[in-house]
Image (cartoon, rainbow, N blue to C red; front, top):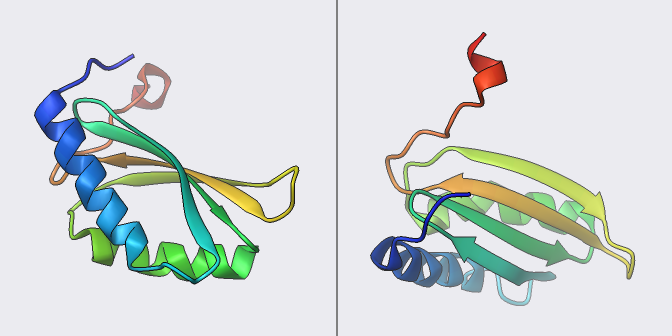
Length: 102
């Protein structure tokens, strides 16, 4: 588990909140954000897959970072969909798992 860089974590949360705020009223809401040193884990809920797709299409542009991202979307038990995003800090490459290096 990556340690926490308070400066990065605090600024990343501000940037992420602002980027998601640009989609207010679009059926998308932030569930949680956990930012560490170079990587953030973000959970976003949406009314349906179409609304989530629209959000994802505009999110990185609204965020304004040069970033790598991994995404997993699942149906929510209470309805809608929950997407988990793993997103690197601005200008940081996604870490590679040892198994991917073979």
